[in-house]
Image (cartoon, rainbow, N blue to C red; front, side):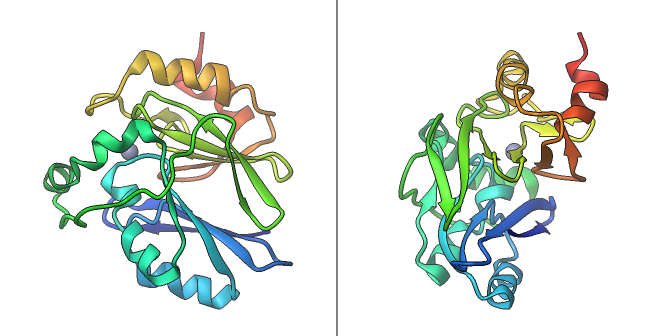
Length: 209
Ligand SMILES: [Zn+2]
């Protein structure tokens, strides 16, 4: 499995490029910005992007999606519960002091129990509302790897004070769906360092009983 993790943009969103070494098929998750850097890695690995998957519609995760779609022809996937947030990208841009990326068009909604794939590499879509209503996480069972978006961080959880956020929902999503995964699962959060499910179960201050 090819897996490049590249912090992009001023908020350093962790963009993942996941590719299959055999078929050279790939998916890009959360291309928030710095599309030239993402395209350079795609070219370096000689992979073809089949899908652009967005964990949630915050500008630092979705800002570069249209540019990447134009360059690769791959469809953009986002959970429909975040479509309202997409309409607020100009406002989001003003909040974080970024240029607005303009209108982002979604090709397909993905939700609980859907699968996304790059060749034989398959991830289960887990709907994990709380940071936003449409937040999703992607779990690759064969590789025991979770792309968590802004739901779970090393030692922290996503903020819930922005429109569509709910502390109760994020805690429920994490306890019922994320912590149901095996301890050895490697977690790639939307920002910051990698962690594991076991580590967060043990020591994340937001998840202690
Ligand atoms: Zn976010």
